[in-house]
Structure formats: structure tokens, C-alpha cells
Figure 1 (cartoon, one colour):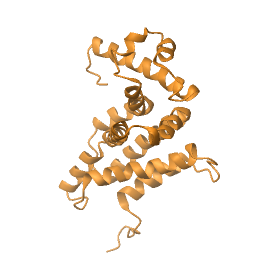
Figure 2 (cartoon, one colour):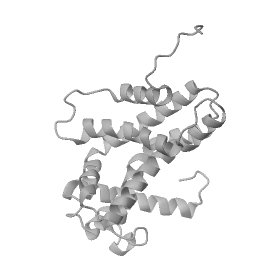
Figure 3 (cartoon, helix red, strand yellow):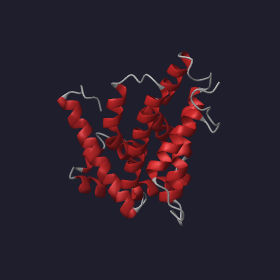
Figure 4 (cartoon, one colour):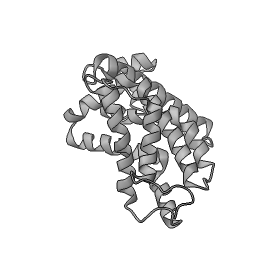
Length: 219
């Protein structure tokens, strides 16, 4: 939500979030199929019909949840990153590290809801499944503005020419595999890893690859 939004827009966003929070709670408690719109409305403290002023269906609630889960934790970092103009790749690295840590932290706090979302993906109708996966992936790439970031670095000559859409989604995939293995899959955390260490290593691998860098002063 933009800092320049009007009071009316903020009210709409607050009501949407209120409903989504109730949906996340009910989906985690009763499962997607077990939770009803009536129960979600009761949990949110609104009339059942009010939900349809903001969401078309229960599917629409499900598809909208990933943004609600992640955005509150990363929004401050996003605003900070967008207000700055990094001068070096090291500056970009630090911003991406902070954003990634915030995103991982948010997912950890909503593990039960994330489990419900991921468990239901195979049972979604094809159109709904496509919308859900597209919106989830696009949301995370837009949080970091990865495509714009990569394109700017290509134009500056810092990065080689590459397909920015593929590279951006590859970064998201690098992140999600750790979330899946540590928080979602059975037997998780058999070998627990620090999310701070994961975030740092993923960002460095994404930005610099696995090739050893020459020591400063070497030719």
C-alpha cells in the first residue's frame, strides 16, 4: 500500500487485511475445504456479505494470502530500498539481504497458513492454480523489483546480458527451497540452518555465482 494513499484507500486495505487474517487463521485451523465464508466473516467481525465487497470467492481469498503473509514484514525495507540509489553491488547485496531476511521471517511466523496454501495447490482447479502460482511468484519478484534491478545493472555494464524474468524467478526458487525443507516438509529441520546464513549465501550466490573472485590487487 502506498504511503500516499487516501484515508478511503487505507480503510479498504485495512478491511481487506482484516478479512485475510481471519481467512489465514481459519484455513490453518480447519483446512481450506473445512473453512466457510460464514466462519471467516465471523472471525473477521464482519457480515458475510461484506467479504464479497472485497473478494470474489474463497478461492480469491486463498490466492491473495501470500501477499498478506509477506508484505507487512518487508514493506519497510522495500520503502527504504526504493528511496535509495545503491552505488555498488555491495550496496545491492546488503539491501537484498535485509529484504530476504524479512521475507523469511514473515513466512516463519505464518508457517501453518503457508502449509495450507502449499498443500492445496495440487487440488486447485487448473485456472486457479495458475493464478495462484503466477501471483505468488510475481509478488516476490516485484518485492525486490528484481527484473528492474537486473536490467539497470545490465545497462550499467555491471552484469552480463541475461533474461531478467528467468533470473528473477530463479532467485525466488532459491529462497523457497529452503523454506520448504526447513518449515513445510515432513521431518523438517533435520539439519537446521540459520536463516541469516541462508539469506546471506543465497544473495551472494545470486549476485556473484560460485566462481572464486580474485584477491584485491590481483590482475
